[in-house]
Length: 438
Image 1: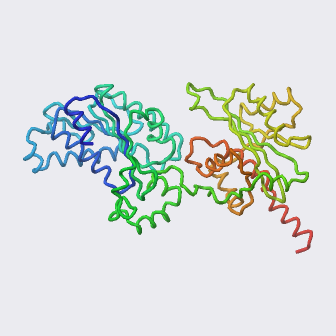
Image 2: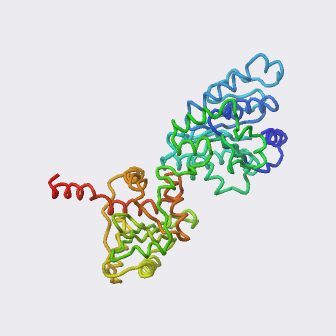
Image 3: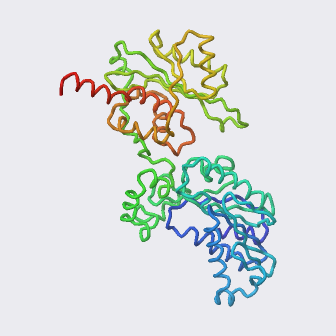
């Protein structure tokens, strides 16, 4: 940050923007959003600094604390040229006698009339709202708006400081869009391969970033309070827990293909399809379509093939046809397709152009998180098997990373397969009890 201060004060060309990911309780706001703007005002009161947080109250609180520093007797004695104008000494923004200013904004708010020599964004997303697609998109769009308020479009640095909350949070968005022009500092509470740059590992003490404030006892307490996914985001700086979130990696039963083929008798194959044909400017921004091939064997769900592809509708029709015939399709098989708009079209086209047994899946009644949670006990009980293959790790990573992964096609098809496989078990059990007279 002192390097960035030198660029800004001396109007030098910036070499990068800065992203800092640190756990809560690491004095990040005190250092970055309260002290640093006051330090810049001390060195050059002609600078304008724009600061942002997820709420206006938080942004204003940071600005007030900076103002308290600047108006303190010690500061005035040390830096007498930095004076806040009495007629422009508000809470949301205040100006200095040398025409610099501190301007605050918050995610989703408009910011007009000011351009900054430096932009600081401190927690642009509320950690409690990180699962909301709307909130994340709003934060990412607001980040674009902040970029438009640079005094020098090429050389005004941006500092983002936050906890990692989702693969597509503001950190993820910026690293994806502008990764080559960003210096990324990542400091998880416990030493891991997430530490960046790696040479910073030498400053960890007994494997801890801050053994005094975030010691082992505090860490264990937060693991209980936040759960594995919450702890992974806020303290490990990993939007996906290493052990999984709603679903844990070790819950899946992994078997080799030879063992699987030895279990097959005459069970029908059911294929579950999730379609996506959005045409966005960058292919990487599109959602893929996903498909899995399954069998119900001894009352357990076996997934023996999975694939995701980026295709338009005509290409995907051919792909489905080739996929199912390459993976045990026969006259007893069924292809089930989620009944959203393009899914209905695919069903109609397959009916018209092929002899495949194709039906629409029942429309989901709950959101994706609720659906996956409802079937998690079956997966935890070892009732879902996956055949080891090139696709298996990707499948498990996506499911166990949900809801913090960029894509969730495998989650959709898995929950649909679980619903078909396990939803009638309670009724079947009651029928057996009644038949036996128990």
